[in-house]
Length: 212
Image (cartoon, rainbow, N blue to C red):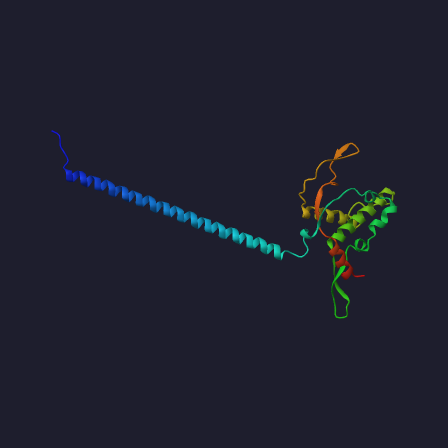
């Protein structure tokens, strides 16, 4: 025997469906609102982070040290053959007073104006060591007695290690490209562009504070 729903039952059922749809719609609306709110908050946080990052970057730019690589210049080493020889006619190129003294400067003085502490400007110290190694090579080429290690001579052996340490400390990671000279392909770093430091302030410092 078939059963029939009364009219009131059908009406109640329709009302329940409508109420359920309204509840579902409200939930979807609230979920969308929460998602939009989260996205807005995330956008605000990202903007705040980027603003802080920009301010920090500007701070480093404004307060960076006065003497830096940024104050230098772009250059290529090139090939200077006057420095690629042991010939004594080019000795004068290595006789810069700042180089010969190893960049020695007066750091402090007593009440009578007498130096109490000395220092050395690293660039001139390094060139001084190059000068010492060149002199040792000249002696060896001329057949004069040449010491073999630091036990016999404390100067150029120190320089050999000092320059080694300087190169390692610098840790220059620039990739030097192949070049060709007289039909021979090799790598000598002569034509690669470099960011060089400004040496003028170092010469000025030496002139103002050298012990001489």
